[in-house]
Amino acid sequence: MTRTAQAPVDRRFIDRWSPRSFTGKPISAADIMSLFEAARWAPSTSNTQPWRFVYGLAGSAGFEAIFSTLVPFNQGWAQRASALVAVLSATQSVAPGTAQAKPSPNHAFDTGAAWMSLALQAETMGWRTHAMGGFNADALRLQLEVPAGFAVHCVVAVGEQGPRENLPAELQEREV
Image (cartoon, rainbow, N blue to C red):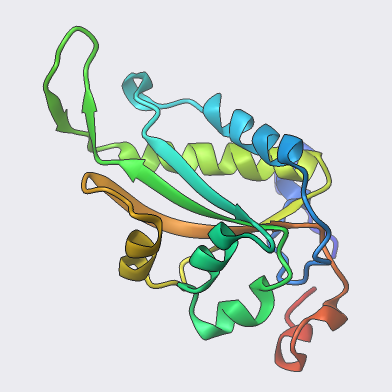
């Protein structure tokens, strides 16, 4: 697929996309930690860094816990991902020099910046990411024992891009 920018930008922004076809190649602990390290350096309002990532590597109980909350459509293709990552954020923050938590109106905005950092780092390392809104947030909260005060935003599949033949027939045409 060829994409063309309307103004000069780094190729990573143009080349990054969200495939559904993955090979199932295992991702190393070092590689997954590099993705989270990139997210750690994302900008945030008041330097609150509200994002939290809970992940499971393919074949692990964590992967199965997250996978079980996906809608059937997403389960049909995400089963070949190398890792699944739940993206959460703290809805309150404590300002420096205080002890009282206050609502953090920018938690979702900041977490979006962190997710994009994760996605671009993955791209740089030869991995692909695909964010999903098709999951049961209440079930995910239960499966991962997410405490009160945290918002559940999405689930991200991470993996090496595979051939579109790895997908169910009805998705192969969409994988371009």
